[in-house]
Length: 274
Image (cartoon, rainbow, N blue to C red; front, side, top):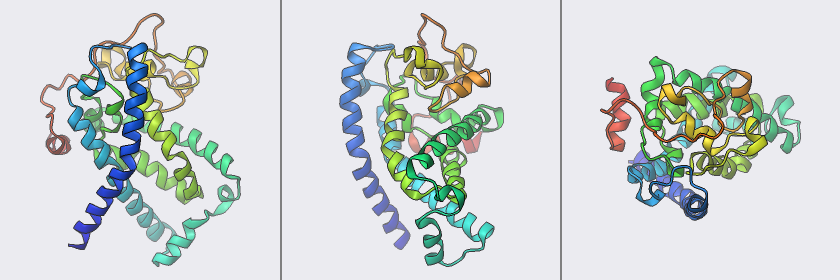
């Protein structure tokens, strides 16, 4: 009963956290995609699968919160031998080691660059046959828009951002870094999925743009096995996976697996039954 109450409380907190972002993103991208759409077939509030996307926006913060906590405790107990709750809290409260001694801005920069590099390779791994069935949930939407940003299977989350964040904490990055970056990561993820024809001009080789990432959501033979970076497109440039042909925009999104269900519960079970 206590566990159920805790889950309900986390869902309630998630709603209070997510609703302002949904309102702001919905307003901003409604205006921007009206004037500079990449595809423009239908506005985001009429997209197919919108209800599923909104459920993920509520569920994903809860999953990542519990996952980050669970993995952090596990690593602390089994790798560092710290077993008391107060000691664990104290260990992470102010950070530790060399990284913790750096100013907050330096920790933010280090985290952004190193985590993006790690997530680049993790993302490539999820496009391999063995892990693709979990990542396919994110690629399933045929109407791609900013609301698609939160559609991730828990396995994808645990072996991706959650695990990277835990290693960052263990390495000494202070928790304040995540609090500071939370609005940034949420809105930039929505931005790169938005229906915008933005390429960022000369900065396209440095930062991920909406067009750059929308190519990643096309079919594999079109560009779906390219553009793995989350924030810094320069990693794709360095490792030979950069793809954004000049004067051409992506048009068709989704996956070739027609059996992917359009129901959150079934989507979570689907990769486990494949």
